[in-house]
Image 1 (cartoon, each protein chain N blue to C red):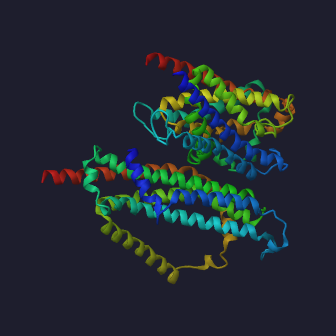
Image 2: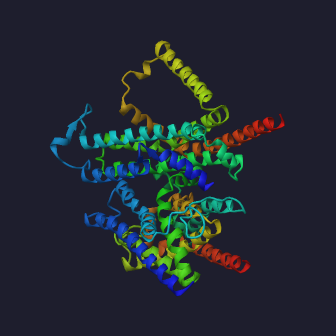
Image 3: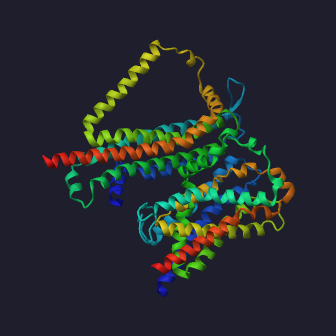
Length: 263
Length: 296
């Protein structure tokens, strides 16, 4: 199992001859150091601005909050890209026959894919949390601090969403192959996009009038209980779903192998 | 273990301790020297200083890199990051999640039995999560702290995966548990000196606080080390540490902080109730450990 996990790690770690682990580590250190050097409490007039509500906002906070938000989106996209990558890499690199020659069962091979993504979700969540703590610790109290807290309160939900997508996408990639899985998933996403466009064209859009980040922040404050419950229980449900996805994939793969073997 | 091996292990331990204390104390001292105090600083800044919990893990990796010990994930002398649920090892994970909750409830129950006047029916209104969620408090804390256990994992990767196996090898189990607990307690000393855990208003400040921390760390360390050896992994210890730091207790919400201040007036006596169940569990773990060692 360790070897299989290491194989996946090597696969995702290298981006154009640069190791991703080092990039993430250095970026995190840089973010922490810069946040400490430029805290939101810095009373320099050049950095202070007044927002529409008449509240003084430190632009340094705005910069760091924007960077943090972008980091979250980038990290989520990166991890999401790994689902297809690790599912298709063995076939693409033509090492499937070699894998079959190893003294491991099909279940171990499948489990390694699922465990790797689970570990990736844990590491991603931990890293996002370190960024959150650093960003929030030096934020001036006010709207920017509230935005960071809002982003922070959704961190477990980001991880849950990633695992949910992995639980849905992995069986498609592993059972149907990359081409067909991509066709089905793209078709599904297009359907969602069409529904959204349809809603934007013909639905009741009155709720979007006057919508901005402060509305979202106050919505989160109003629904704090729901968010706490979601953070507490959704990981349990998604882990059960994730395990179910693994069992289902393993069962279907076994059935396929039996079918091929029996003629 | 041969004498030369012991000497090598001692040197490695020394190097590890220099890194572990150096990195963590640098962060803690920076916090102190910039004029911060634990009870005055914002909760957010405290969380940031809490990132010093990653120092033992960094020290483990740095020492391994310098001593060329390697970075294997499983097996003897490894980072102990592998997870094996076979041979009833899954019980360790359940134990790690549930036990801190039971210990806290027992500790607070003991406190309320001895001082019933501490009970305040209205106290849960001070909760940030809302009174309706009180029955779910332990499960919510267990799930969230397990999920965000990276800081506790940072400490355990140092203490349980590097320090304790080496200390046990060098000086035997009993001495290692005592020494490990004292080292772990002293590691917290800069924060204890500014009021972390016990405040600053107790007689004998800060020496009694440091001593109590060393005792608590020895008891907790015994349980966590047994758990790590039993599971062959550092994960149950990390989970238990994280859940313990999250204080998953319903009874704790009914203990009035103001009345506690009135009755104890800052005396360390208030912190004696909680470690009693911990001490009993540490004793049980030690007995189980001894029994398992005899069977092998």
